[in-house]
Image (cartoon, rainbow, N blue to C red):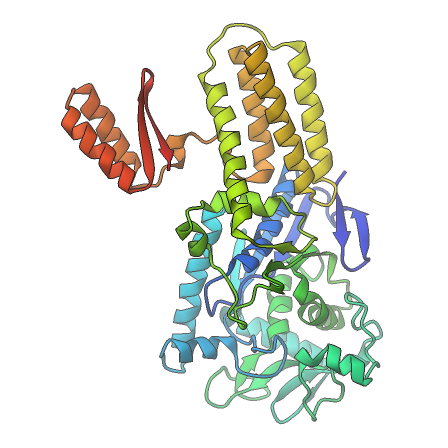
Length: 481
């Protein structure tokens, strides 16, 4: 029985989809004006964990993720420069929609490369804001017809006073306008033409850059994008909406307001939010210049899956502080898992599976599933896995295992890895980068031909790519240095 912490109700709830065994999942994707930093990637990994648990539990998941490639202002609300035009200025490109799309597509592709390295499963549908302008205009029209919008000199705004339950996701009070509140929510910005401090833009005017609309040339507000695209691909009501915790007070609050005002129906049933990854004492942030990208992790000698394992060691709902030393520990942990798999793969002993081992594996599987179904408790699930590793190593050292025993253990580890996604049982050959595998094959052929000089040259070439080569009676073994 899967339980998830629902930000909307502020408690863990038993997950019950709107349609039996089918799940509509929307995850807020990146604003593609720069590389994703590892704090961003923590959010996408938690969402991947959620998706993997749903699949593990037998649900059919329809996953949609957006790319924000227009409309996200630097204040995260209605003030300042659009982040995409900021990218155009940074990269010396002309201020045109074509150049904006070019920049957006470039960083969207880089994002896809990063999540692929992290074994994050791609969504069923990627959708970008700039390719869904008409859907956003249609949604604003619907809100206008229902009397929720008004126009100022700089755009079209949503009037939150027309909604009784505005701010229910974050527990906001819409009529609160004291000085402390203004300080607390200063990031929203104050426009003197707004009827209320938290009224938000549905369309921003821009006579130089944008699209034509019934209200004037310009571009959509950030929040309307996700409402329009999620409803296009998942329907007016769907199961789960995810994002980082900084989306709760502004972006997701406003998504709910405009979506439910337009349809008169509940928007998303469950809202899940990942906590920040901190760098020093502050959250990782592009605007503050305090961030690390995945390439930095790789350049420090760590693999993306070692970073994935590190993130899984902290519950998604808890803040996490990033330090390089913790990656060293994760590296050792993943190596320990691979060492056991290597031992198990080498076992050739005859014999049946012992009843004691069957009981141990059954108990471990039950404990693992209980952990992941308790609001995606990956630290507890990892504890079950590493406890199993300790016990299996003891059995191997003391009594040995049969090949059938070993195969049963490997199948269970594979089963756990459907959720964890850290490639525990992948062979070194399967994990090799494309440039190493052909060299290893050529070297095997050189050794068969007793061309030792050629074999040594190929070994040196493999070494320069960061892999060691060991010749054993059963053949060469190639490992990452």
